[in-house]
Length: 124
Image (cartoon, rainbow, N blue to C red; front, side):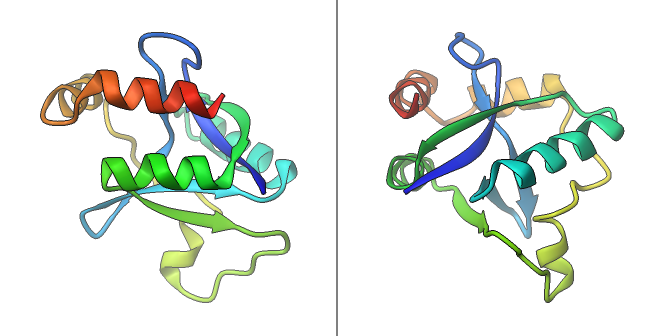
């Protein structure tokens, strides 16, 4: 199954995937429909977040990547209706963003950046 994810700087040395932090866990959002991914990007842009690219990838590959990085995945299905406040984060970005310098520090502390980059390249 193909799904859509949001990538920053795709095909570069500084490639990253859009995620949210929820209760201390990193969650990668996946979208079943391109329209939902586009709407989410529009909301990010309206809140002055960095604008990601929408990339179509294989669901199993992104799940494997997330498992290796100890990230969780959440799929926003067609006609998704939030049932909890937590579900609302799958439709509307949080109010604040991790600053780019903190994002860089986080990437450099612990995770093997080359392995993550290689896994992301495999998705494309």
